[in-house]
Image (cartoon, rainbow, N blue to C red; front, top):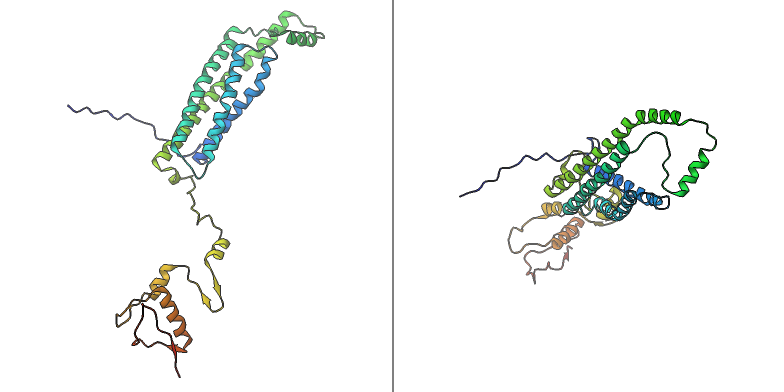
Length: 286
């Protein structure tokens, strides 16, 4: 009995970042975006000294703990000589898992802020230090409780929709960044990344040489001396077999013969016996 697994549909990987940048550049920007969020957790630890909640402190500690992982991911992606698909897949898994954990905190704080927080303008201090600051700030105001509630609700009604839009947009952008990471990893595994329209081909060591360096390396010409850089051209010009078929001349022998014949001063006697395949000493023509 033969079991056939039905091939499921898979979306094609992205070939560029927003259609205007290289895929690898977009991956680097995505990791920089994640690093920016993690670095903000360092400053968020100040909430420990100002009476922050346990949920806030736990989020900041988690951000600092994952900061080193995203630094490693950014370094691995920016490595030009080593483009390892397996490492990129690890980074993509890390990114999507971090997004899922962050979504838990996002949902908790959103419900707490939209549902359980009374937006009536009444200050809610979390510590004695904050309470002292609030008392000092409210000392010169002359406003009733009803007026404060009315102004606070008007401000909340104007800003709550825009705030929800920003949170939803940020959540969707991170989903796009995760898909970008997986697309880059898939192209590396298939070996198709360097063939993408906006991707630059990987230059080898010879192509990275400047024109001047190439000339200095492969163009040696001096007085009375000629060096041919292209062996194929040299072999094509000098690949001759003697008519008597007694021997095959080596490259050094052919060069020596050409230089001496071009001077017009000496000739060779092919009838002389060769020893160990060497060319006999030249005789000057009287």
